[in-house]
Image (cartoon, rainbow, N blue to C red; front, top):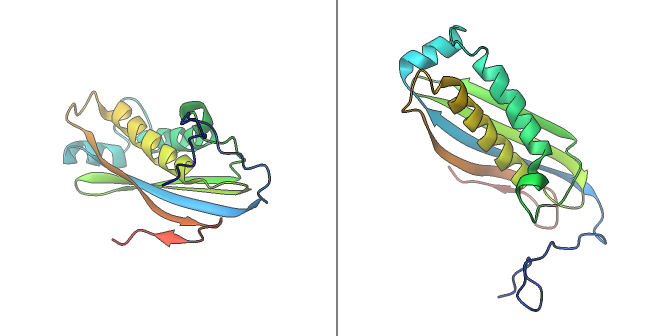
Length: 156
């Protein structure tokens, strides 16, 4: 098996995408933050002392998508041409969905995963004084579009 991020000497390196043509690409990732139902009610009614929890998480996720190469050493610096973070407050959790788009030489899966992860962390940060048991249940890639491997969707 050939590993794309290892050179012939087995050293980690960034894959050279210079010769690839830019194409439209998108990826969507999700995270779930579980916290106390009373805290969820406070979030939806705007009664959290730190302020607008959902706005902070949304902005944190979008900002994180644009900074992914600073966090992941082999990620390429690409143009994040669109990023959205949607948050749905349920009975027991907040569902975070992040979608990132580009027209570049490599995909945005890591940017979408980073956006969802950091939005989830921001949610925890905003409510940790109210619920020390709040936690992130999962972070996962839901779908990707474009590039050599085409489209992919997670089954359930």
